[in-house]
Amino acid sequence: MDIRRRNNIRITGRTDGPTVVLAHGFGCDQNMWRLTVPALEEHYRVVLFDYVGSGGSELSAWDEKRYSSLAGYAQDVVDVCEELDLRDAVLVGHSVSAMVGVLAARAAPERIGSLVMVAPSPCYIDSDGYRGGFSAEDIDELLESLESNYLGWSAAMAPVIMGNPERPELGEELTNSFCATDPEIARVFARTTFLSDSRDDLGSVTVPTLVLECVQDVIAPREVGAHVHARIPGSTLVTLGATGHCPQLSAPQETNAAILAFLRGLR
Image (cartoon, rainbow, N blue to C red; front, side, top):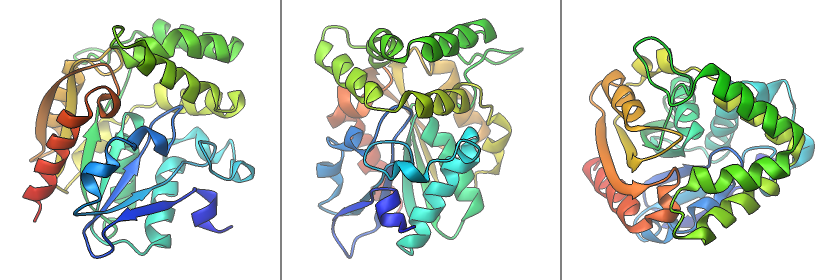
C-alpha cells in the first residue's frame, strides 16, 4: 500500500530546510499540530502524518496485532521516514508518541537525528521508586470505562486530560477528536498506551533530546519529566508554564518557542 496515502502524509514548509516530523498522540491526529506548523514552516520542512487507525489514515490497513505494541506505531514512523527518504530528521512526539520516537530512533538511527518529547510518559503506573501518576487499579478502571462506553468516556476524560477548564473549547476539541476515532481501534491504542512500560528504553537514546513538561499535567506529572530527563543522557528538560497534557494547543506560543530554541541549537 502507498505509505503516503496509508498514513495521510502532508508536507509543508521549506523544501530545502531541515526536516521536522510531527507525531500525534492517542485519540488524536495531525490536526493537533495546527498551531505549531506555522511557527516551523518558515525555516523547516514539516512532515505531518496520521498513525494507521487515526485521522485521515487508511483504516483498512489497521491490524490489531501490529498496533497492540508501541513497536507497531514506531514502524509507522519508520515507514514514513523511509518513504520520504529522510535523514537526520527531528521527531517531535506528543504524549505516547514520545516513546514511539525512542523506538523509531533506535530502529532507524540514520533517519532520526534528534527527539522532542512533548508531555512524555514512559510508564503510567506507579511502582516502587517511580511515580507514573496512576495506580494499576486506576488504569484498569480507565480501560474498563473506555471499553464499556467509549463516547461517554471521551466526553468525561478529554476535558480532564486537556486541563484548562476556564477554556472549555479546548476540552471540547479533544472530545471531538477522541469521538472521531473508531471505538475498537481506540480500545487497542488505549491498552497499548496505558499499559506500556518504556523506562528501560530511555537509556538507548543517543541523539539530542528535548523533554517538554507542563507545570501541571494529570497524565504526566512533573516526576515523570524528571525521570525521563535523568534516564536520557545529555537531554534538556524544559518546564513550560502551561497546564494540561496538550500544550501545543493550550499554550502554543510558549511550546513553539521552546521547540524552536532547541532546533536552533542543533545547527
